[in-house]
Amino acid sequence: MTSFLVFIILVLVGIAVWQLTKIFDLTQIGASSENSEIANDKDNTVNGYLMFAFVGFIYVFTIYSLYAWGDLVLGTPASEHGPDYDNLMYISFAIIFFVQTITQFLLHYFAFKYRGKEGQKALYFADNNKLEAVWTIIPVIVLAGLIMYGLYTWNNIMFVDEEDKQDAIVIELYAKQFGWEARYAGDDKTLGKANVRLIEGINTLGVDLADPAAQDDKVVTELHLPVGKKVIFKMRSQDVLHSAYMPHFRAQMNCVPGMITQFAFTPTVTTADMRNDEAIMAKVDKINKIRTENSKKIVAEGGTALDPYTFDYLLLCNKICGASHYNMQMKIVVDTPADFKKWLAEKPTLAQQWKEANAPAPAAAPAEATNAVAVDSTKVVAQVIK
Image (cartoon, rainbow, N blue to C red):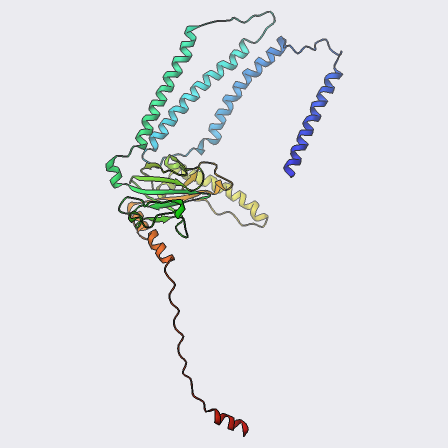
């Protein structure tokens, strides 16, 4: 309701300003002979200088942006394909910045140089084949090169040969409003069948527990990956369109209800090593300084201070999937192969968890028979009479 009232007030203020402007225009009638709405030389000169000044603003703000927020880029990629992905992005950025710098300069400079002047007529070209060839062929060549290089990089990222499949770890990422779960395939490298109609109790992924391939599947809420080993992700969604986004691994794939999508990569940097990366350490330090300042205000208001931030890889949802979309994340830990094997061995299979959760309750132990002492009622009565 408050927002609606603020909106109404802003509308009324706008109407009032508009009416005042009209009143001001009416008061100027007859005050000056220069009342034409057609731009004169002075107007064109002012607009020309403003256009030229604006291109300067664009360049200054671009340089400032790189200086002020340049440290927010992700930094060291943590997957095998990450450097190729970053290289493609850097080439695209370089081309965009180069073209933008030249075209914006020419656009605003020409608006200044060829501004309107009284008595001057613009030179009109009905046709110019050379110009058309230049601004058609050059973009075609550049874009074709980018597209071909992009397809080459994408195919290298997405292609998984048979040898990799035999040695890879298969993990299902299951998305739902508003959280993630992961399911690890067992030694058979095959995930059991699943269907949302089978969701019941602890079987929150709808795994078909009658499927032999599902007997060694393990369901977890924290994702662990072994460094240096190919991981094949199978992705499902329970409700709406989600997107499995792992920024530091340069990986993203939509999770679509009713179908299974796939992405694969090889982690190359453990969580412990990434925490010691200079760029990550600088980011963590910056974040903790901000949290410390915010904690002072929170504590002054009677709240609890914020905990220090520690870097972790994250699985995020990159689609706006609902009201609590911002909460949809899962911690990812990249371990050494030995630590990963130990962690996974400690996790029970879903079949074991289901069996324990649905085991019949133990029968109640029979009550122990009490040793009744026989009492002679006639003696009791006699004692009472006495």
